[in-house]
Amino acid sequence: MNPFALSVTDLEKRARAVRRRIVLLNANSPAGGHTGADLSQVEILTALYFRILNCSPQLINSDERDIYIQSKGHAVGGYYCVLAEAGFIPVEWLPTYQHADSHLPGHPVKHKTPGVELNTGALGHGLPVAVGIALAAKRNNSQRRVFVVTGDGELAEGSNWEAALVAAHYQLDNLIIINDKNNLQLAGSTKDILNTDPLDEKWRAFGMEVTECRGNDMADVVATIEGLQPHGKPHVVIANTTKGAGISFIQGRAEWHHRIPKGDEIELALEELKDE
Image 1 (tube, rainbow, N blue to C red):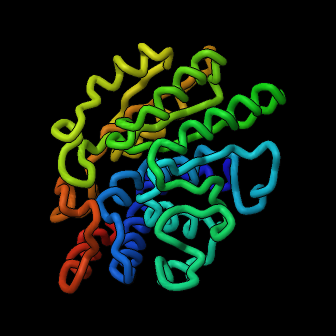
Image 2: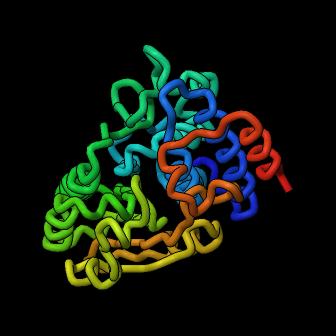
């Protein structure tokens, strides 16, 4: 069970708190950050860590804990903020993000950060490892589920589709793949750089059960993920999000892929993220 089990209303409040942490975390980073990608995934990660995952700091070594893998490793800033909110890491670590000798490097590193299950950052690695973990759980008759969040630009990597073939072949219905589909990547739109649409048809052709949701709508994210049932197929949730969601001057703008708030932008962003 999840130790928080928050209501949708409380999840929305927690998501605003996570966004405020993301602004300050990136603003204090000496090596930049990925503000847009951090923000687009907030509802997904908040729903997972504060309602859905059977995982907590107390269960961090349990063989039956659910596994979460942040395949889009460049969005680690948002991931760290969620881990801090959930008690996996001290909030005092957040200002050290990407500083020398920090526990919080620019991509997830398992031996540095409690709660991180896999080193990621070379895109296309997270899903193949998640498939292996899900297969091992099946063979061990474990009840654990394996969740992995990928970016949509990341799906240009062929290793994801090889992993999908394996997942479908072994009927890994304990695997939940969540696509953070914000339609932007490093240099522009995914449609212009390498169009992977229609994603739903592609995933189904690879043998997946596919559901879509509004990825920045907390109620829809929760209802969609909680509504998944094991039917002998891996699950794919296409979460249609907005890059930079939650901050008006950041959302939907490709230049915020690797940009951080500065000067007045910090206060403007925090003002927009005040609790309602």
